[in-house]
Image (cartoon, rainbow, N blue to C red; front, side, top):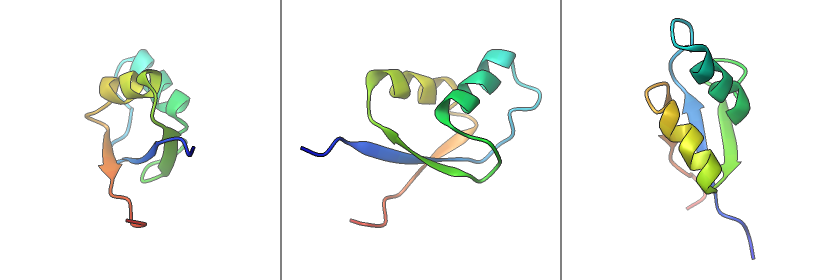
Length: 64
């Protein structure tokens, strides 16, 4: 069975935000602005996404 995934894009810089939020962006796999990463849908990644929800946006899946 295929694991569920979702794609997110960084739309805002982490500059000026607390260090833990910058570390969360790095932990999600972001290296630069406008980068899109695909992550497995787990409670841990959902929590990380929730923490930096003001810096990212969910990308619509084009395959559907």
